[in-house]
Image (cartoon, rainbow, N blue to C red; front, side, top):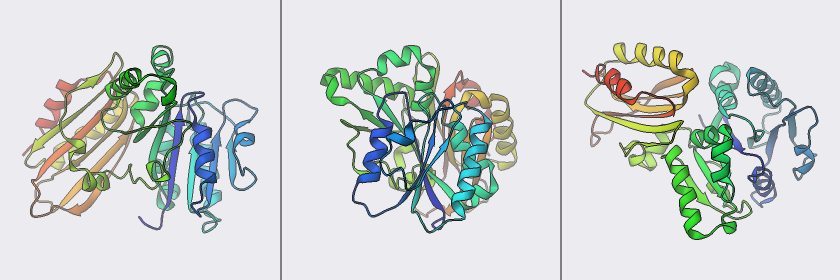
Length: 319
């Protein structure tokens, strides 16, 4: 995986501070060179003019629709970038504030050429501490962006009181119980808070934070919920794989993220899977260590998910 170009997806609602964060990344004295892909909404692009150093490596996708045309544009641009490999260290994709980040993330699983040469490092979501409560009432895109995030930048923290900030963070946690949250002002965060996170590499996360998939209290609001399951012992892959495939095909539109580490019977290695809507990806990774308890842990984040039915189906896959 080390020879793949890392890609950071930067998302967040209108005015949250995505471009400010992007400019900070580009101007920090890190010695790295980034290719930047800006996904504009509408026919006239303006973000390109707002990004510092835009004469270097900025590419625009001038359609804001959250459908496969975005993915097609992204594939075309990334394939072009790969022909210039060595001229940059990483790729940053800034999505429109009205976008669901799923089509962008899916690109790194569904297109074989892109998946072979680029790796999704993390989805970073910037949220506005002052206006988030209002946005959650009026803009469903905000909930999706938060639910989809690996890392959340809680920006404009100086514009609210400490109590209000704590309340905002509770609302974020109600939608996504698992993302890392960093409070900030004017998007001033250390680069290592947003880059090189390996956050989309679930196996890597669990090496660093084994409690990441621990079963916690169910967090939910009216439309988005997140919960995790832990099952001791082994799972029968011949039962689980057909079920998870069927489940993601039927419930795909409601599944923002699903991921997990599974203990398959008679398999010395851990099986890691992750899904984005109907797109499912998984493979065998490192071996179970002698001191590890063999068990399976899964996280589901989405809309209108029937936890009881999922638990029952997964339980039926146990040996």
